Length: 142
Image (cartoon, rainbow, N blue to C red; front, top):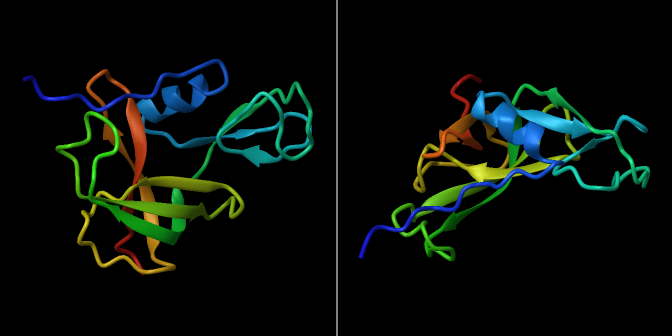
């Protein structure tokens, strides 16, 4: 039996700019062209103004933020993650966008001494297909 491969994101028309930027090591967030509200993930309708043609643009953000919550994943619920468990997922409030929630793997490992309010920076997990998925690392600066 061959080892399983973790699934990779499949960009669609709305998310393609996000995944392209991630592959380039840049974190971008969609912004409605009608009301200027940020939305993640982008959708067919702006979650703030309800416009059905939000004309999203993707704007770079610092990738710095604060841990709001976390969990350690100890069981692979999808094929391809058996070799990755255990891992720690963090829920992060970005500095610029407190109402936008990003969830990603904490690269410091499942035993990292994470606490509410810890500072993190965005990094990227490289994928076999040349893409990347945003992840987080504890920020060593005070």
